[in-house]
Structures are given as C-alpha cells and as structure tokens.
Length: 478
Image (tube, rainbow, N blue to C red; front, side, top):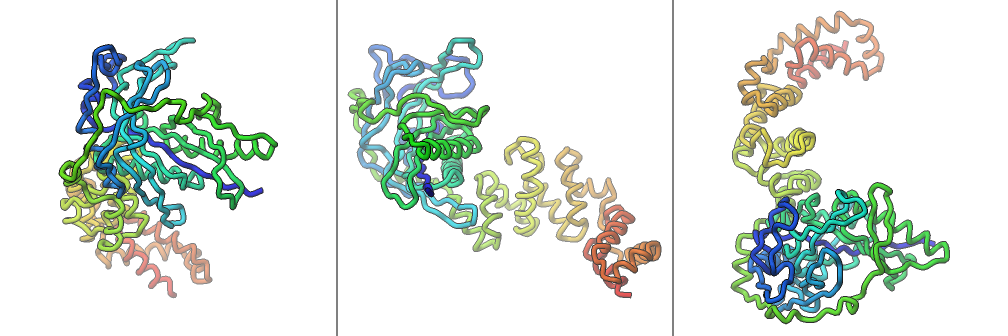
C-alpha cells in the first residue's frame, strides 16, 4: 500500500522582551538557576498577573508579517496540568480566542516550486520552567528562571507532506521571527522549539489518521530525522496489524528514534477556562499601526526584488535573504558602491559565507566589513587582481593583515597584464613540452589544462587567466 504523510507543526518562540509576560522578572538567558523567578511566576498566594504590553506588540508584528487576522478581542485561559517545572499547576495561555488568527507563509521546495502553508493561529502564553537531568544522578533538578517567559505558539495547518517540507516551513518561521525582531530564535538556548504532529494515511484518503506528537525538538536536523523515523515507525505498526496510539513522544538523537513520553491529552483534559485574574485583551487599529509601522521589507519581497531588479538567480537571492543581517550586508552602499551586485552576491554567498561557517560567526561579527570587501572586489573589476588572487587577499584580510590594497602591494600580487611578457612565457612552456603539444593537436583537449597550470605556476598565479587561455589557444592551433 502507498502511504501519505500528514504533518502539522507547533512552534514555540520566546519573545524578545526584557521582562516576563505577566511579571517584572527579567528574561535574560544564563542566570544562575532560580534567580529570575518572582512571586508572580511561582503563583504564590496574593499575587496577580499583569500583561506585558510589549509581548502583545511583538505578537501583532508577527501576525502582520504572515498576513494573518489580528483579533480585536482575545482572552487568556488557564491550561491545567501538573508537572514539576510548572509551579502554579496551570499555564496561562490562549485557547478559544487567540490574538493572531489564520495566516499563511510560502515555502520553497527542493525543485524550486513554491507551496503555501496555512497558519491556524498564533497565541500568547507563558513558558514553563525547565527540568534538568544532566548534572544529577537519579534525580531531577528544577530551574524556574524560564517560568513566565513570553511565548508565541505558532500552530500550522496539517499542510505538510514530508519531513523536508516541515523543515522548510520551520526554517521559514525561524527566518521571519528573527527578521522582524521579535525573537533571537536561538535553538540551543531554547528560544525556538518545535513540536511535530505526524500521521500517515493510505494515499488518496481524505480523513485524518491518528497522530503522534514529537515534543521539544531544538534543531532542524533533528526535526527532519525525528519525522522520518516516526513515519517509518507508524507504517510498520499499521502494516504489522497494529494501530497507532495518540501519544506524545520524544526524539532521542543518540539512538535516532522516538519513544513514548505520555498519552496525548485532549483539550478537555486540560480543563481550559478563562483566567479570572486577567481582563480580556482589546487591540485597536492605533495599536496595530504603532506595532507595525516600522516592519522591514519582508524576506520574500526582498528576494523577489533581488531577482527582478538586480538580476540575481532565485537561489542566490534566497541565500542573501536567509537572514536580515546578510541582506543588509549585501545592500550596504559601502559594498555596492564599489562593485557590481552580481560579484558582491557571489562573494557573500561563497567565500564570505564559507569563512563565517568555519569560524562559527554571524555576519555581524565578520572581521571583513562591507567596505573592506567592496575595496577588494573593486580590484577584481578594475583588473588589478583576478579571482584566485583575490581569495588569497581575502584570507589575509580575514586574518587581520590589513586592507586589500596594502596586502596586494606587500605581497606583490598585482595581476600580470603585459601581453608580451605572457606571450614569452607561453612560448617557453610550449617549446619545453612538445609531447603534450602534439597530444593536444591530435585531439586530447584535456592537456590544455596542463598548459594553463604551467603558465600560472611560472607567473606565480599573477597572469590574467583570460589572456592566458586566449594566447594558448592561438599558439596551439599549429
């Protein structure tokens, strides 16, 4: 039997507020355990929650970025369950009336085709604390610093049909929340976590099958691996005569498998009811306008502009708009004012991206600034150096050896463009290698690369490659 996979994602992104969603306690990451949880976060008697206006503003920004409905009125509810890192015994969340309603995002598939994924809702809620196991033997430590941190839970429609589509969607949401400045999206610190709802059904079947939820996945690679494993597991269960049980599962990256965590609760198990301590949330047009007036050009719009106005390929434009920092680096006038956009794009997505990855740096931490890269690339365009030499200069700049012109002068890297001198070197090499000349003239064209290499070696890489190729072809005609 052929099977179809149905996937929906619930993404929890921590909002970039300085204080928690219902208290004034700080949200900074990395503090000593249990030093940033106040009486409100712990639900102690006599305290009352007060909604953080900034959290609402950031939620509205996200809603507008995905072309979603913003609720004029929404309410907060208590989601009741008992867990060691949930000190109040309930979580303040939104259920029936979320702040952000239906929206949509577009993802690009591997073949370049676009697919629209529906967003069901995005609601505000408080985060729970954190259970710690690594440093305890047979015990669990509880750190409540995270309790009360504002979350935006983004719930998709079950529109994804493969692990690759799910990863593309998660990456798109991650790109958006960072781009519009509502979250740092740091997956290692837990600022961006994904729950995957996965089910399989016979191909052509319309009815949704029983799903399982894979909880708290904190990397895109693990998300793909967890979904792939779960798909195969469910198919094996069904084809073996069993049935899939609705449950919450955890992904173990060491064993590359999912395993049961608990039976999946339904909404009625949580006994949702409106929080009696919080008034309904009202959002008017003025608040929406103030929250979104400084929204930047969104990544899809910028990508399309790079394709249509700058003439970049869809692939390169997508790489440049993967993060706002990279896009701003590319559009920096200190770069684009010194060289052509195509050359700048190729170097940002090639040499610069490679150096950043090897060093584990974000583009804002690059030792080579936009102006410095522009100076280097201008020397390619004016013929002072060619591309291969430019890579040597870039490496020296990256290592702090100075500006492009100073490095070129100090290392004697200026391109050799004297045609007569290159002609003399070409003639010398052809005369010294008659066997290879005869092979080339008899149709063994691969030998041409040998001659190019010999000329570049003789000129220490400084000869103009185009001139070398043209002169060799002319001389080898016989």
